[in-house]
Length: 581
Image (cartoon, rainbow, N blue to C red; front, side):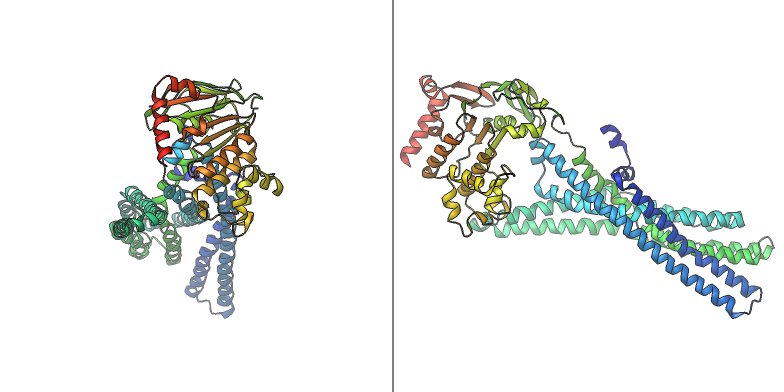
């Protein structure tokens, strides 16, 4: 199925996304066709008026009635165009909302690494700007282009019926106009892709500049960082300027030549009338109808930029929607037992293997610690157990069942994960904690905060639990954000708790409070801790020492010290730092 989607043309793909709104688009197209027909119909009335003049019709009422008919037709054109536009926009904004939802849902089903590979600026650009760009295609091109294409075709058929020679004359400018149009389109995909790349780089630079403003100011990098922003802004602007400069001449010629039907209709028709093979009445009719074709043709050509960019815009959105997902079923149940087994787990990131056959047993209710040098693979193991990534080899089982055979939502209920850089949303403290269990009452939220040792500092905030934490929790310190994240995880009451250096931002005094709170809250639960302070995992049932993606050693604290290996070296270094502190 995915292969078939990839083979779809951009227009076929976007039409396939309309879902239940297809009927609204059909209605919109019908209204647009009627509207364009109403805009062309006055030309037929003009034909009657000119015929009356030629035939010596002198009654004023004859002309007044037909003028009123034309006014009514133009009014009808406005009404039907408005109905078509309203219907297409109503359907389009619903479709865009659904596409945006599907993109965000897709990100939640993708492996974490695939999401992190893309910058936040690029993803924001795709989910917001690129999807917004689809509005022109659905709301305007689908009804208006279709209608403006259909009506000229009908008129040309009518001209061919009157006189096939004049039909060919009406099309005489089309080959040259199309040649200019094709020349304009040449290289447009590359030009637009360059504008997309340049715009993404500008977005990324802007996000980086704003996000890193503190570091920029502290280290005096304001000038260099600003110069980079100016450079990327210049590149983004000129990517559009260069594109427009390359296409403006052929576009102008195409817009001038294509609708210039009179250039061929007048001389050829005049010769045919002179030769007596075309009546004056038919000649006048063809002249007027040829003029009526001009407006729809120009309207169609006005969408040329949208056609040029369609493939790239849709390609970015499809890159998200068609991206590989983590292997998880929709239906099924999680096992009752909560023991974990890692069997010969391998994991590759960007074609480089970072875990090389890791195996470990984590009994239900045990306290397991993962320690090792930075970059050894500890956090990767934690993320794999938390089902944020999929293993590339081996397996991870919960209660004897491969986690890939458990629905993601059901598995998520089993695991609470706290990392050293947990994200807080821009809402109040209470709601950030309540994310752990949305059905929790205010009392349960506050109880979790008390048990996690952060109730006192929350109450010291300006509005207590109703204090807004700011974007990414920016109104709070790193330690405060961390403690709220722990309270959120504790409120979830999951049977498996993973703490990935969860106390990295806390001072020793608060760390001791958090450790005591965590010990109480995780009693009887499976606890997996990654710690840079080894003193916090001395009491672990089993400590796994990870180095270069393999298990270097494992055992209790005393057993590992007795082997005089890597763990002992790390312990000594830790104690020296602690003593010096």
